Amino acid sequence: MCVREIPLYVESISRLGRSTKDLLNIIDTLTDKGVTLISHKEKIDTNTPAGKFMLTVFAALSQLEREQLKQRQREGIEIAKAQGKYTGRKPIPTDWMRFGQLYGEWRAKNITGRDFMRRMDMSANTFYRRVHECELRHGITEQTLA
Image (cartoon, rainbow, N blue to C red; front, side, top):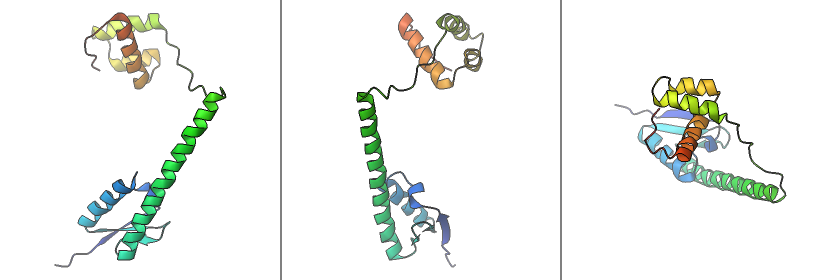
């Protein structure tokens, strides 16, 4: 039986993994399954020893570039905060009276969490954050379930 390698074409190796280790693990998994990676941007073919070497080098460079970008972003945010230009997102106002009413209905299982969110015009993240705040304020220790 002839084992034929299947090519997988990607635009860039930087889109395949988040770190060099992650990328190399993905490549190992693909290789174990008989898949050859071919990168269009970097012109890398993992079917050759030189291609495997270049993949490792480019993966390390991509990770370095990504980490430097994050570092510059953090530095820029710190500078902007020091200058008072970066204050973060404005908090979403909450009608706590209405929230309290709906919270009671929700806890009594008269309405679903989705109904609660829709009536308060909140995303799921905001809803659960506000539920947590409400429970902390009122000393409610029961586990909250959706």
